Image 1 (tube, one colour):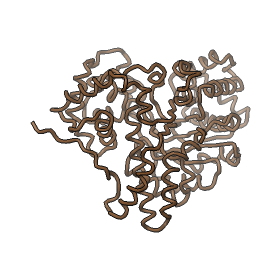
Image 2 (cartoon, one colour):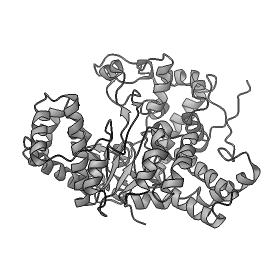
Image 3 (cartoon, rainbow, N blue to C red):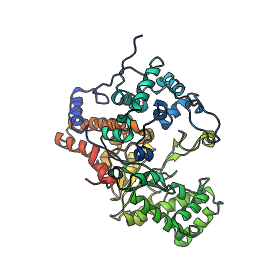
Image 4 (cartoon, rainbow, N blue to C red):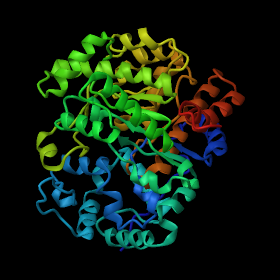
Length: 474
């Protein structure tokens, strides 16, 4: 049987205009092999701490990647059939080859999506596969991938070196003891695999486990977290602990960008209401807003970069949440307002030269109207890249077109992959590099920047801006 070839065109994602394409090629040739800076992501730190082989193709490509299984679920394919573990321990498919065959049968569903581009790149460039994934080639794929994963060359640390990842940041909650980061403390890997402090578990009073988490926070830190001041001291304690394991940034995934600037008495009363477990939705939202302002003050104190990424309606599907838990592909973007929402925080701290905030959004309608003007004025603000649902060629181009004229390039922070899918990291960064070179080539062709400026910008967008924004050294 004649199988379809798997081919990656060398000019993929470049303009179809020959003159612009030639310029993009020239820019890309200089930056394509630069080291990868991955300062915002969700890979598992145990991979790098213990350097154990990945198990099989399904375990690596399907189970950790909500981009993959949310598409399959949208077509009526159950998460149980994909081996996704249930909260109640009920049976799910355990045969990884069956799971892979099901994926291969439905791989056509990913046509035209970023996931298809990332996966094909990994299949071709990481595993050397030269035929397209189809039901007929599923077994060949599974064997090639799974056999390769058992070799020393495919251990996590070896892949880190092969992918030229200079530094990767994982993301852990405030209550995480960072045992995997402890395992590499004092080794050279501690400088390459760092953590990020994400305190949503002790800041979001709408969580079902919030009250228990506040009690655990007190146990871990030895602070009295039944009081407002003790609670703040406990969070400072945890920030310092995370910094010990390389953290240079914090991460805040709130439903909205609301901030607040309440009096101490108001904060004490609001905190007491939240830890009573009887707070209203409005009080919970106000508490999150106040905590963004409090955490900005802490960032000024300890120098950690603050990442704010609002606008996701988390766990939109209650059936999936109840049966499978968080982060199972049911987070949906929502409309987000920034100008009024951020004003209390910016009034208090926005002109402080020690504050560094990176703003993300899932609402593209605010790029030109709100985010670019804010970042184009306040020294503390930078714009995170197109990410998550917009981590795509079109999403990246829309971002550059809409923010550059007001915020420029240097109020942005390069690219981050924001992924749990470790092997896709080079593919994702390659897409961003190609799209940036395409955008810059167009500016050169239109004589809006010089070719020399284009080459300098390509380097900055690929490498330097991320290192600078996340304080990772030069």
